[in-house]
Length: 548
Image 1: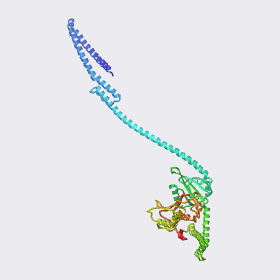
Image 2 (image 1 turned 45 degrees about the horizontal axis):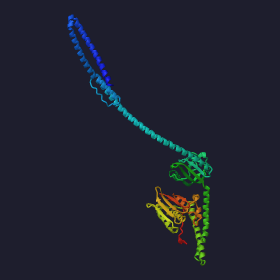
Image 3 (image 1 turned 135 degrees about the vertical axis):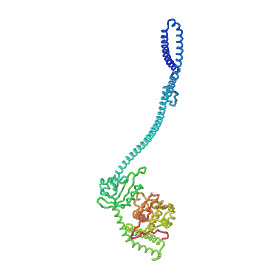
Image 4 (image 1 turned 180 degrees about the vertical axis):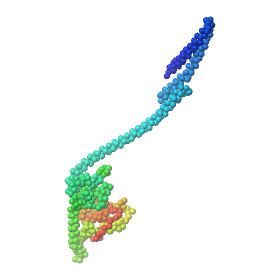
């Protein structure tokens, strides 16, 4: 409010009060004069007129004094407090709740000011509370916004992952359909299962080999007594599932199955886990081949070899005796050329004798399951070093570097020392025989968490890819070996693997043609299993330079 406006208000208020007071005094003066004049005569009235005027002047002076006093009182007690209150109201209205109202007194104006102050204090307190609540709400809103933003990112990631999974699933489904088309008419029994072994696909060969219709086995667990499995012992299945599900490696092995009509058959199974780029297991692919007829042929071949070996043994012995007699000069002195020819005859005949003995004693015993296993605490590293000592001449002759990696804390192992000697002889002699000149032979023996590991590596000829499946079969020699002058019976690896697997171990290999081969042997920490038998296997005598 402007200053001029304030002055005008004061003047109007004072004038109004003055007029009211003047009117009151005039009325009072008039009444006094009137009654006074009635009691006097005309001369007295005139004589007293001066006195009346004097009285009126005194009344006027009193009026002015009262007017001024009333005006000052009203201004100080009413107008000024109201102005201060109004000013304070304007300041507070602009948001300055810290402003203090300077209005005192015990009258109504003072009470009004105090009430107004209390109201302002209440508003201030309320505003503080509102500000705090607003800050809290803003913090909550920001937190919610951050959470929503985070959830938005998470949701986008989930949607992106879901889209990627969808794409992967589509691709996988497409690949699966292609795979089905490719294997539908293959002669081998092929099934696809989920990670829990539930059959989701089987090709036509499954019906032909097992006799079960596909609609009878889809949705069942593979290889149980409800379909064609359940004929092997618990340890076999435990080892199989551990290999394919926990270790995520391919499992291969020979097992006995049964057809729908109850007829048993022998199959060679290979079960491979299928993983995505992150190593997550998608499903298993199992391939089985009915080898019943092959086993029968193999058994017949073994029987034939046993019979033939018995028949060959006598004439070979005769050839051996007569050759020795001729070399000793019992039939007269020989020329150098004749002696050289007889030496070759003797060597060839001796190899035939060794082969016949191996077939008669070891192979037949393995096939018939009649060989004994007699474990005892044995230092297998000493057996390995003994074999390397026997091979020292050939190792030097081919300038092969021998690298040993043997666990210093390697304990004695519960094995049959004679059988371990045969195993080391076969793997180490092969690593020398088929190594290149100047190559490397590496022998590693160590104790692992759950088994003992033996590795024999060479840098030699390697095994052709298309012949790896036959490397452990009897009388088999790879084509790249046959083309050389390196001699062998094709029985060593068969015998060595049979010994390890029959006694509870495991054998496998990695090889690349032209670069070398690594044979791996695992023995359980408990060692070889005891096996009762009628015969002990004979270890092969390693040819030494002084033999001829």
